[in-house]
Image (cartoon, rainbow, N blue to C red; front, side, top):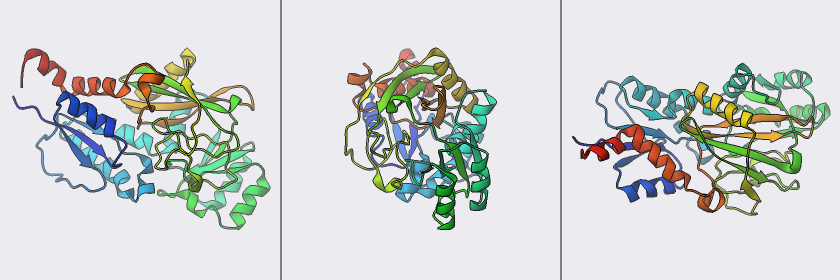
Length: 335
């Protein structure tokens, strides 16, 4: 029986080199599916792949690949209709590309998270902010690399930005923005918990320089000064970015509380996320732990074998083999 290839749906040219390398090392047949340059026939019922792995990021628009975000929704729905198994399928993708959906899910699950309001017009920002406690941040609903995120310490700062017309662009691709209470992180550090196949994978604590406005990504800690105005300091956003690393930040293995790990797994079960990460912080405002960002795309931490003691990409490909049925066919000697 001929083995159908695994399809890797992606748009970034470099992020998944370790994944491709591990697939090549094992001789696993796969095809690269560029989500920003693709087509499909909705009438075709043939199943071309044993498995499709969705690796499309909401930050695609920062690389002029905006179409990939929305096209992926349609393509994943089509794959589900014809019976192709998908890692991080359409429901996971919809959660990944909407902070409003993430907030609603956290609320439904009773998981502590920063109080927020979802708005669709600049005129709604001031009244939304009045229902929250300053300082607060305003960010696009479809995020990615912390782009356009702004922090405001007082109502006057927000009003000045609104009067100057500075926030029209923050409503982003779907004309929706999030106003959210800002919680400085105790010790100026946050923790990212990674999970795979309904199991805890690892957690890392990342320490930030309080004088810098960093976007923190586990695959490559990097500074993106153009992504944030000078006013937006101390905000943590772990996500893949394109800028080269300018300053090494301290990272260490973390041991999150058991209830946090269970909350992450509850989120992933509810959102149908097979692999990803969730960030949390301990707030200087009230000492509470808040989960604040759900990521269905993970590049894993740089030099993971040294930091966490194993290669997450190897475990990820183990999982892909199981999902695609390749591991079973090897055991029974089927080509």
